[in-house]
Length: 259
Image (cartoon, rainbow, N blue to C red; front, side):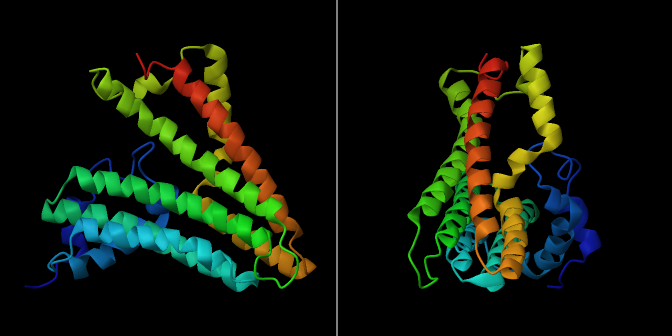
């Protein structure tokens, strides 16, 4: 059976609205990854590979970001970026293959969310261990590993706060939340939420953004000859994660999502 062309794939696997989802599409997906994933799709749509199998592999790549970051120097940071980019690529491909083959399942949705949790956590834990200089040959400073783990916990909790809205509504017998319900009822909270969204500082604790930041920090540290900026990055990301966890919780409670 001939492989479908990109033009044949696009209307099926990229239906209207896929790239415009407010919270469901990453900027990297819109910018370049969705175009790259189409080139991968055409080699997989007529194989026996299932969307869930791709999601499992996606998750493995996300988790591998942590040990990749333990490699000292710029090489480890580059490996971390590669692992996260492979995660992102397969995160696009699994859904696109599901649309082409019409193989949708709740288990696929569940596995996709698990993969997102693990990738974000792995990058931040890996950053903390990298800052602790685990394989540097000297004294290991576990404070940085603790802060990296704290940042990872915050990143996971932020996602959980969003996902648990659906759990709470389901258990309360309510329909899925509508987009308009996410707007806070308090004008003060609404202004703060819009300011945070404009600054987008919270995105730094997500796997893709964090891995790119780690690479920048690794380059600067290579020039300096120490881990100063990597350690500064761990502290900043831990603070952002904890602050965002609190602000996001307040935003959920102040909105109509639980009404």
